Amino acid sequence: MKIAGYRIFKALTFAFLFILGCQATPLERTSEQYVQDLHRKAFVADLHNDLMEKILEDGVDIGIRNAETHLDIPKMEEGGIDFLLCAAWSSPNIEHYDQSKHVLDMIDAFYSAVEKNSGKMGLALNAQDVRRLQAEGKIAVMMSIEGGHAIESDMALLRTFYRVGVRAMTLTWMNNNEWADASSPDPSRYGADYYR
Image (tube, rainbow, N blue to C red; front, top):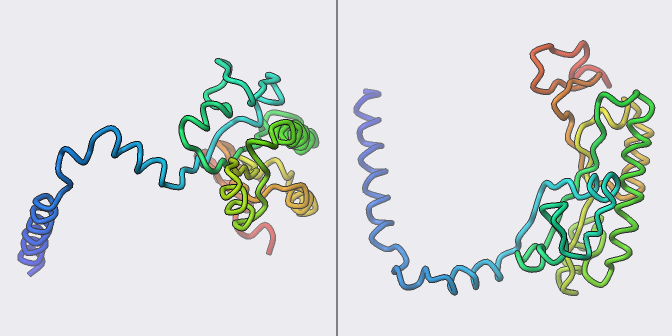
């Protein structure tokens, strides 16, 4: 019975795709101009970039075109970027109590860069800010933390990062921490039970 059901499913899927293919957009509508128009109408989001690190570590000026980074404001404008989720990252090899300090330094440098380029971009703390900045013709940027080890297992640090504008955090990077496992083959001692 399972085999017959599978064959029927395959036949219906093929028929659906065939019908869909017959109604595809004519080739002339997929011109470069059509694609560009579609792209300009879309909300384009970059949900992971390392600009914060480049600004702090390399002193990159994101307001001008540069070869030091894959992303700067001129490139964002050309690419039609509406929203950036910028990651603050701290190496897990940094001394435990210096990880949060490194992330705070990155956030501080990033605030300065956003303020310097306030005519082109603005910090978004919520969806309303994103919509407002888009309506103003500005790029909306939101801060995140890549790797929960940066909060050093301290909920007060998590709250502090929120207060300074961070709105997302990955639980792990490529390393385990005290309360979440990453891609490491060694499970942590606590996992989800850490904060119960």
